[in-house]
Length: 211
Image 1 (cartoon, rainbow, N blue to C red):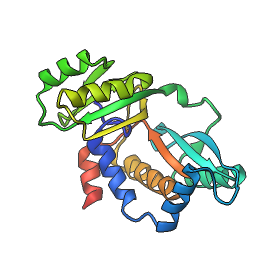
Image 2: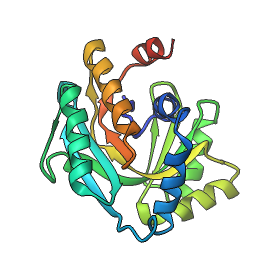
Image 3: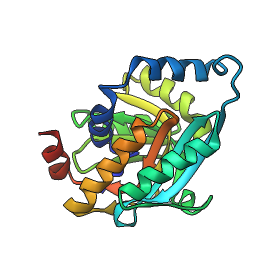
């Protein structure tokens, strides 16, 4: 199934919605300042931490920080609190591939979309279990493919360059509960920009969390 967090748009939307609704204003302002070159001359660095979540899931955490010691301590604390552990550089990143991702809802015509995607230079088209469709591209062709798809009147509901897990790790409800908590806590850290995982969490478990 294509239910990894980086792939399935509905799953990703559910996770984003769980975390995105209560981001404090100062966090947003700080993120904007980071993007435009730091706060009052502070020196920010991009760092990626790799680790293992509940059930042996692979997790990558991209951060922007002016203090690596603080950030790694915070990230390590979240992993250990949620039954995971921080790994070394390269311990899980080999399980992910950098791709351009265009997401489409289940109501598009699959055959017509496939034809348009291949004509536009896409690398692959993946139909998820919920019948939503992901068009995958080489990272450097992402904008070209996106523009060609829009010209063909296939406007994606989401489009990004992301890290996609090569295979998924299915979790039972107990591990999934810990995994959602881990992702939630990571997302709440100020320095965390993006979290990637190969966790495969069923819609039934996610729905139970939404209730």
